[in-house]
Image (cartoon, rainbow, N blue to C red; front, side, top):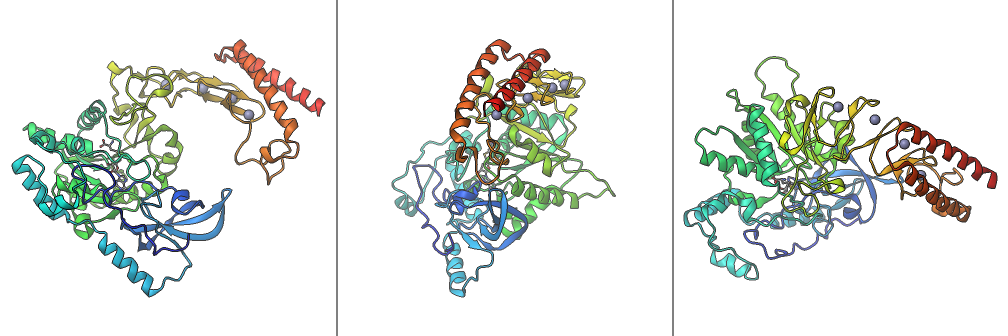
Length: 515
Ligand code: SAH
Ligand code: ZN
Ligand code: ZN
Ligand code: ZN
Ligand code: ZN
């Protein structure tokens, strides 16, 4: 890395996709440091956004610091806020690097040439045209440009009201991770929003929810909910007016439509009339939590500015939809949030579907700053109310007497480990080498600790001089563990956990004797 001028040539539309031609290349999702910076491990420094725009252009680049084994190495660099794949945007620049006039000019020129070919306004007008004829019409010149693409014919009015069904989801994990809600999850969210008394929804990266709101509004006269969609997928500008959709990058809080779009959003947040507002967001899971949190805080601050009634330390209500294993990261930035047990699932995600059990359940949850007891989960799907925890939990989530809480995060029944003093996944067991619970197949090696064999820093177990001895010990460990497992049958009642502990203590002693 080092050169920032050589942006990858914008390829023409990648695959056969209808309606995508002007915009497919604009979308992008999350950013993975190693992909964007040529293998450098890096940490995001949120304190500063760049004055540089990246290549696509997706707004200000973010500042990162190079790290090695978790330690900052000092040299900072800017990289694209949204692209995980260098093929999509290889903007890269050291912070202390001098950028020549020619290079800046080249960059500007590039950005000018890579704006979408139609503005939102033009797309609205073209979209209006589609609506009249109910077929996808492509201008001749455009047709010729994209003659290698599939086109949809005979699009019904109903389909035009559901663009997310019409557009192919941009599934490429590295660029646009578009996972669309199932009708079940989407309807649940909308019903919940209505039951909680909200009448305005700021849909950030939730096009299907936005669409459900829009289409319900057009069908039911007394339906009073309104929605504004903020999304990076510019294809939506062909379906929605500038009051319904803003082209937005949630990794750097960037409105592509400039001040006007910013104002649209501000206005939407302000229009109170007693209609309460909630923000619902479902970012790509590869996203940097820190960058997302910083943008959401800005949206929350925008909402806050609007409050007329005196001092009031309320927060803008939020549903942040994200996998359960990001819980601690999200709570770090939003201590007022808590995680609900409801499993959100997706149409185009083969793995996680509703009704699956065990590890195949969806890991995606709702994080919210609304009081948990207010979030009523569907009893017919097995959720129940825990009177002690004061929240709805999934059917297999048992209230642990020792932790005094319903501890399962993944929907499976968790078990309490007396040694760890907490509940753990059912597939875990207590490892005395690591001094914590882990999968049976784990390799007794903590990433942050030094070598576990000799305890010295600087090398991992696999590179330890006494490696061979350690390996045989470990294999023996594993066999013993399996034997124990059979005996204990995973129930881990208190006494078996104790036996377990005693056994391992003996074993460790034996090992010491041997060496
Ligand atoms: N489940 C949602 C879709 C979530 S997929 C639904 O059904 O409505 C993630 C969404 O975030 C997609 O619509 C995608 O276009 C959008 N997105 C991805 N990266 C983004 C970014 N950097 N800024 C704003 N939106 C983004
Ligand atoms: Zn409980
Ligand atoms: Zn417990
Ligand atoms: Zn344990
Ligand atoms: Zn271990």
